[in-house]
Image (tube, rainbow, N blue to C red; front, top):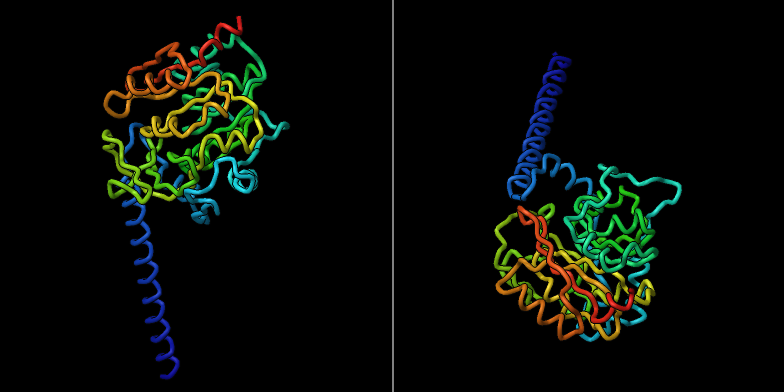
Length: 321
């Protein structure tokens, strides 16, 4: 009889354990559904939930020790921190590129061709691409790197996209950060939304005073991300000039341009997305003219895959020929 009681008690405990497993499984599936259902992007994301967990599991929200208004963007301590913590070089010369479509010579939507009209196949240049996405899809810099031996830094804030970028074996520095909209480092709120992610807050305006762009109509996961001034990346890498700066960050392009000390950072050409905000094209053209740049081209593409102004430093194009 005692043995039967023990068996009965064991069966009861087993049943409860099974219930706990079922409940935990249900909660996990609900969590996956919430993540996926809250995300709306312009392209399908069949593996979004898997990518999210792969990219973010074990990660902690890191922030710079220099997130304040008094620090110079050229502060030696900040630059050293960036070299150790925020900029990495994962390129392995013994490995080939790991591209999905290696037969595509220029995956950009026309920006690279416009920039190359200036440089005429110049080799060994230096680029910065912010909004680097996965390092291949519609990349504005891959052509220069593969065929003209350029290098540079690829900046991508979204951890999912950055995880994919790491797999491409690009011959460049990588940084899972974003460009600051201030002249000092800051911790920003970033909306993860595949190729349309951006600095964005759930509450309209964040603690830095950053307002959402008026065309934001998408949903996704919000995360905290370290943002750093453009000039700080250049100084940290000790590059004397930037041949091509590609800026496509879905909404804060003007604010980022306003932080750049063009008298201290020698940027030869830029492609900048202008579509977000009222009169952005006119405002951007006027602002850059005051900083010594000419508009030398306009790149557009159907489905809003490109809406970029192409700039060159006054007199630079003529100086090459």
